[in-house]
Length: 253
Image (cartoon, rainbow, N blue to C red; front, side):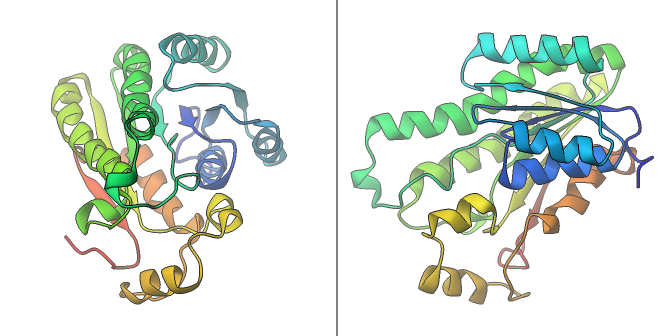
């Protein structure tokens, strides 16, 4: 396991907690040096990576601010080396309220799009020069299984994740000649710490979600990690522009 990503340099945005922290730890266990950026405190995830012998750099990162993004990438390259893996994980989800689309304010819509869509654009734009200098790279975007089945009262979030699927496909076309692969993971509802603590996705909502799955159990962050490492590694060297849904068979496409 440790050799699959030995000496690769990976960036994980939104990696302070929850699924992002699980991504960062999995990459470190596979041998990568991991840079974690988040608007939240990264102390806990840094300690967990160091506990498994990982080489890490953690810093505040606002993916909607180009200056913050560029400085984070500069420091990552300075401390860890050229970036070869990007996990565009930063997004608004568990903090969002579900509501009819007519009640979503224009400001709330713009905030979701800024973080969930433009954030991935800003970070990809900043790390691609590093990948081009390597002659290779893997960008892993994070969408959602809801894109493929629709969802009521969550239009801002689902629309933002649909944009990420399109972003993935177009960017894969643009970067293929540089040896840079661009793929996408689309999890279903994952019982991360943010989801569990918010308590919104419980009771009848959770029951309805589970009943839509072929594998009818709750999903944990660990369920996504095998696919993450596959897309980050050379095992997927001829895979690009693809979206892999990981939701226990709620969506089949």
